[in-house]
Image 1 (cartoon, rainbow, N blue to C red):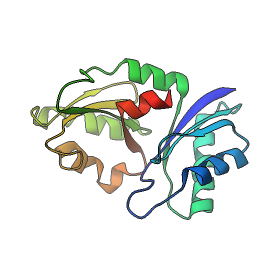
Image 2: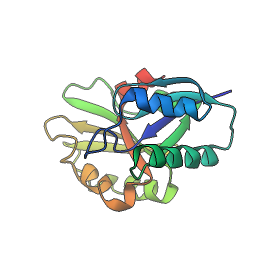
Image 3: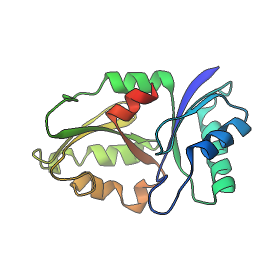
Length: 175
């Protein structure tokens, strides 16, 4: 069995409400084992024998669309990969007045585009660094997570189907 983590984008925000119990039930109905939802923001830990992550992602997104009636997008990572991502966080995760985030991307071109914004960001507001399939992002709490240049960029429609971000503390809970 392979341990996976599904990170759903846009759940329980913007009018898309999915109860954790219903989300867990859906994953169990797909035949996955060890299903556990974490927090109410679209995080599901589960196990599957399926090694084809792209096919698995497509199957989960289709099931979410059919069951909950919204245009579902997920980023799917193995638990092993998530542990590597968390361990590689390049900034001081405990920096006073700052929040540590990891932005996951399932499209390498979109990730490169986001990494290329680094020199244009105000380092007093936010800092970023590229990683393996992710963008590490730390932002000043006083600016707010939706008001930074990067946040406004990732809100654009072209990023919606391929990116999602999580606070480093949430990722630690997922592990």
